[in-house]
Length: 96
Image (cartoon, rainbow, N blue to C red; front, side, top):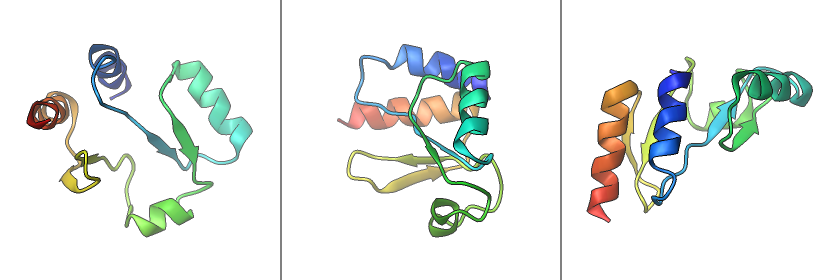
């Protein structure tokens, strides 16, 4: 998914869009190495582990879990991938 996410972030750079990663891969130094190695440029929050507070609050049981939120913060889609994900985001952006 990373190649598509990277391209989507580039294509939507001038739009009111944000991709935010919630990372459950361990401590900050481990996560920072992953972000650097994979050249991930978008914001990431470190949730510690798979039982972290964010994963628990958002009812995440598998990785990756993807939520698409609208400008009001309402969840509009869950677990879309690749082209379906981008189409949903572009449609929400068109709604204004």
